[in-house]
Structures are given as structure tokens and as C-alpha cells.
Amino acid sequence: MMAWTPPIPAERPLDATRKAAGQVVTLAGAQAVAVQAVASLTSAALLWPLIPAARAAAGLASALGQRLLLRPPPDQQAAEMPVPGGAGRAATGGPLTLGVEEEFVLLDPATGAPVLAGPELVRMLGGEPGVRPELMRFQVETATGVCTSLDEAGRELLRLRRLTADAAAQLGCRLVACGVAPYRTPGLAAVTDQPRYRELARRYGPVVAQAGTCACHVHVGVPSPDLGVQVLAQLRPWLAPLLAITANSPIAGGHDTGWASWRHVIWSRWPTATAPAAWPDAAAYDTAIRRLIARGAALDERNVYFLARLSPRYPTVEVRVADVCLDAGTAVLLAGLTRALVATALAEARRGTPAPAAPARQVTAALAAAARHGLAGPGIDPVTGQLVDAAALRARLLEHVSPALADHGDTEMVIGLLRRLDDRGTGAGRQRALFTRGLSTPAFITALARATLSGYEPGRQWAGARVPAPAAKAVVLCQ
Image (cartoon, rainbow, N blue to C red; front, side, top):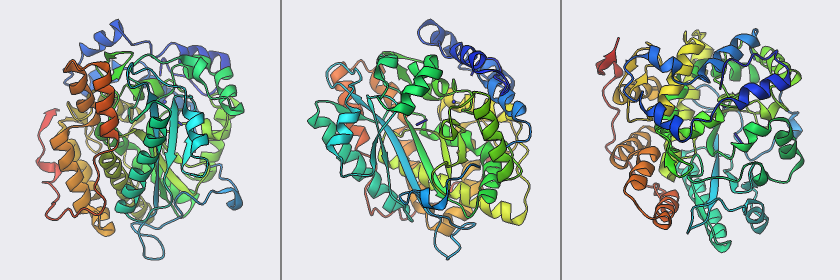
């Protein structure tokens, strides 16, 4: 499922929006090399012009004006995703529920080329409700059921990855968790033959042709739409650290793009794929979404691709900023951090704590830094707006969510998975290391396919994990 160029105000007609979107991500090849020249950025001021698309986020946010819920009737809300919870823990005293959606590519084991077998794979697994077709026929999506613990989520993620990988093998291809396919893709010829996808291709052809990216979406149950909108406002500055941790798409078109998350750059071509604004209530959220659809910036509510939003189908907040994670352990880590962020935001909303002052420009620059560097370079502190190193950024995040992690019993697992991430590297780092090692294409694809089925051992005890030193002790790289 799945968001730049000069600003794309919401009042622009559809044709102008299409034209603006079509100007964006042609940064492959020589332009990607040019982007690499700015790898040593030392100030947030330099990060802002780094991606022209970043300006579109601010332009769209200002164009929306009043800010942002179109919720389906209760009888249309699917039961497989999380149900409402409370601040920190559910109203019944249990943990906030969560569910995870993952998107994968199907690749030829010899050439690495995308294989258009997604619909056939879904048909093969027709009795499995957690496996679905995606926008492109070389993709497939999985969705867990409602989970109350991270270990439950991890078991389900592993089960679905193994199930779909086995089916892919029977079709002569490999299931790979990459934010983008590492080699050339077929463009519009690969669009899945469903009415909605055909209409998306008709309206937004240049953007859809570059689509087929793979994300990981974490749903967390919330008690009401109004509280959910307040949660979105609290989440805005924390989206970039989640992207930095999960960045997993450095290779595209058969070369190193120079970015940790090339998926984020491509996805940002959609005019609505921006960070959420600080909407005052669910009614304002509804109004803004209807305005976007009426002005042609989106086909329907599902096509409003905010990086965190109220789910159009479930009573959840859906955080959509992350690349699909190379291994299942990183996906569990993302789920744990996301649930803790939502729990913290719910608690702050109920206390009446104002949403943090995070200007659209700062949030977008932080996302650009995360997409560019992942955890291998500087990021922007969500609180101070200063440029900081990756260790400081992660420490700030853990400091913010520490009470919620403890409340859910997730502290040791999350810290343990973060330490494993330190040992093994992020998906972007591991992909890049394999690619630059000069492996043959079959060996490269095999390594990625193996990693897709690794990284989490159900029931493992993470005894002894402790929260690192607070962010206040982190080194600031640039004032």
C-alpha cells in the first residue's frame, strides 16, 4: 500500500498535481551520484534543500489549512486488526493491541528481476486471510491478526513470512523483504488487474509507474477518533527515528542510490504522502481528507498516504513511515517502539499535554536525513531540532518511550533487538555491504531471501537488557 517536487497545494487541479508529481524522483543514475556528494551534511539547514520534494510536504500541510476521519461503520471494520485500547494500557487493564502489515517483492533467483506472480501466490494460499495482492503483481502483502504481545506479533510475522516464502519457492521465485526491488521493474505493465489499481494507474500514471515499493505498517488500537487525531499530532516528530531504524532500500535499478531508504524518496512522489499535521479533532481530519479527494490529490481515503494516519478500515492509528524490515526481528522492534510511542501519546493527550512544536519544515528535514543516512549518519533531534548523531537520536527515542515500554513489559525485548541491530546493522547497511562485496546476482538474492526469514526467535528471553543513558548525555554534532 503505500509519499515531492515544488509544493503541490491541495487546491491545484489534478493535471497540475500529476505534472508536479511526475517531476520528482528521477534521481537514479547520475543524479543519485550527485546526491551522494552531500553525504557529509553538517547542518539541518542543508538537509532542507537536499530533497526538493521536502517542500511539497510543507506546501501541502499549509494548503490543508484547518487540518484532519472518515471511519467505516462498525460493521465494516475488519476484525483482523487491533481493537481500541487506552492510554498506556487498554481500558480493560490489558496492553494496547497491535497488528502489522508487511509488503514484499518476488524476485527471480537467477537474475533478480521482479516476477509477476503475486496474484497467483495469493490464489495458492486462498485459505490464508493474512496474505493479499498488492499494487504491483511482483508484490505480496501479509497482515497479522490482532496481537497483544510483541512475542505474539513476532510469531505471526515469522509464520506469514515462511508461508509466503514457501509458496514463492513453488512458483520459482524468492520472497524478499526490500523497500524497493533492487533491479529494474516493469512499470505500469506490472499493475495488478483490479479496478481500484487500474484507476490509480489511469489517474496517477507517472507516479504508479515508479511504485511497487514495500513498507511496514504498524496498527495500534485507539479508543476514539478524536484521541487518535491527538496521537497523530504527538507522533509527528518521532516518525523520522522510526524510518532511520528501518531503512532498507539502498539498491535500485542495479546500483547503489546513495540513500538508506530510496523507498521513502519514491513514495514521497504521492502528493499526500507527508507527515500528519496537528489537526484539532476528528471532524477537521475528515474535512481535510474530503478536501484532498475533491481536489484530485487522492482517489479515495485509502489513497491519502499520510505517514501516520487514522486507518480507513480499522479503529487504529496506522504508522506507515517504515520500509519493510529485512528481518523479522527488526519488524518486531518497530512494532514495539510504535506501540510505545502511541501509548505515550495517548497518555500525553489525556493529560492535556500540548503536541510538541514541530514545524513541517523541521519534520520533513528530519525525514530526509533519516532516508538519506538511516543510522549511518546524522539525524535531527525531535525535541531540539538540532543535528545529532544516531546514538543520540536513538537514546532520545528510548528516553521518550521508556515508561510505556515498561508498562507493556517490552523493555528487555526492545533493548535486546536494538543491540542486535547494532551488531548486525540496519537493513540498508546489510544490503549495501552485500552489494558492494561483489556477490553474483544469485548469491545476492539468496542472501536477501535468507535474511527475510531470520532475525527473531519466538519465546527468547532478553534478560539483562537495560535502557541506555538518557539523550541528555548525547553528543550534539551541530548547533
